[in-house]
Each structure stands twice: as structure tokens, then as C-alpha cells.
Length: 354
Image (cartoon, rainbow, N blue to C red; front, top):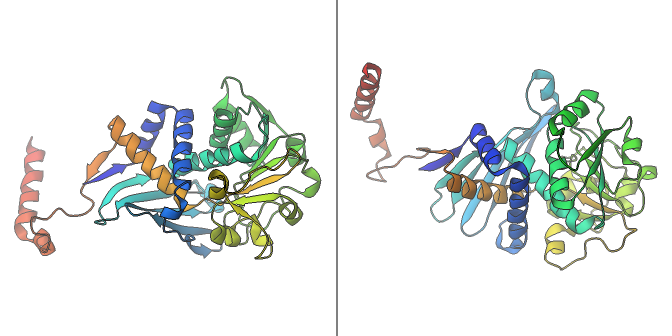
């Protein structure tokens, strides 16, 4: 049987544990798996692009587990009452190919993205960082705020979005959270000025310069979350050239990240190297660091592993017959025999009479 976790199941799981706890625990799962970097069979995600968006598959495996995520990115969706991002994922047993978990991943991805951002900032931001500018206040924004507040102690967040109602939504959702000050700015420049950390989470599929060189101050840590496909950027090229750049998986980031603007031989460091102590994160207080995050399948592997463990511990979800259980594994045709339909019809009839 396959454990099935739908959106309401995942919401129950998060509410039972608390979102801050889930972020903290998922960040630890992500860290554990990045430290096993060489145990994974990796590839860049497979993307099918259209004029209004992209649909992607993100596979990865080690010797025991295989996962993939189906995810889209369609900024135009909000005009039609649909989320920009929708996702689901599977965790399977490598030895047999048996799917062990089928789970929603729209909410899960928001949590894992925020957890990864804050985990990276632990190694790249200055230790005394307390303020953050958050540019783009859509569906990912609350999770980013809670992750940085929980893992780094960020207590002041300046907000900006071209849609003022998005910023108002964020403030309303997080109103009353202890030790957190939220300030709505009138421009990107106003939000960024004096911030220790700058997180960009914009959705438009276009080359953009949300941040320009004159906004960047010595010692800032930049967390570029929104740039995640060819032809989409958020930072001016000069910023990328001058910053110490950390990426998740270079072959994918070269195609989709901020570094798509740079020559193929421009120096970057992969995040696993920093976690493993093979490369420094921040080198000095004045250095500008950039986590050029595009989202990598290893983080989804960690997230699905976490959801599986947490759901089992809390008794959340249901077991479904996603693949057949056969008395004779060579006789799939048996499922189509008339007695199968007859027994099903009798069962339904009895249920209707009860």
C-alpha cells in the first residue's frame, strides 16, 4: 500500500507540530542529505516551457529511495484564481520500485524552500543579522519570514510588492507574532536600505532587475529565490559579478539561476561544499554573499522523507492501492475478470442498502 497525503493532511501535520517546528526540522533533514551529496544520483530538472509558464519534473535517488516532484510555475494563474505554483511528489523504494508515499507538495515546497533559504543564510549572512527586506509578498513570503525569524532571529522585515494588497495580506497573516516587526515600504530601494539580508521572491517569467548595484551595501546577504527558469532573473548582472555566489547544483543553476547571466566559467561554489567545510561561506563582514537558489531535487527528497516520517509518527494520511496487490504477480489480467466486477457491484449494493 502507498501512504497518501493530501493538502488537508499536510495542513493538519503542520498545525499539529507548528510551522516553526516543521521549518526547523525540515532544515535539519535538508542539511543531513546535503552532507550525503555524493550518495545521490543527480540531474537537472526536466522542464517543458510554454509562453505563460513551465511544467517540471525533479527526480533524484540514492541507493535506497527515489523521489520525484511534479511542479509548475505559471505567474498568469493568479488572474484566473489558481496558484502560481502547484506540486505533488512521490517517494519510492529503489530495491523494488514500490511507491511508498504520494504527497501534495505545494504547501510542502513552500516550507522546504523557506527552510533551505534560512539554512543557507546561517552560513552566508553575518551572525548578527536582524533585519531583512522581502521583495515579493506572494504565497511564499510568510514562510520565508517565519523561517528567518525561527532559524536566524530576524526580528524586522521590510516588505515590498508591486501589489499593495499582497503586502497587506502578509501583515494580516502574521499579525501578533511575538518579536517580529513588519514594515511596508513604498519602494524596493526603501525596503532594502540598511537591511542585513535581502530576499527576492518574485514570480514574473522575465529578465528583470529587481535589485540594482546602488542598492547593495557591504556585508549584505542576498537570497535570490524567485529566479528559477531560463530567461528569468531578479538581480542586475553587476551584483552577481561582485558577490560571492553559492548555488545548489551548478549544472541546473547555470541554466536557470542568476548565474545564467554570467560566463560558463565564472566561479561559483555549491552549497554542499560549504556545509561539509570544503569551502568557506562568508569570508568577511564586508563581503556581499548571494545564495542563487533555484530549488533542487535533493531538497524535495528531504522534504518527502520528512513528511513520510512525520505522517507515520502522527498517524496522518491514508493507505491507498496505488499499484495492484496480486495473488499471482504475473497475472495482472486477473484484475479484469468478471468476478472482480461482480464482487465490487455486490459490495456497492450492500453498502447502498445499509
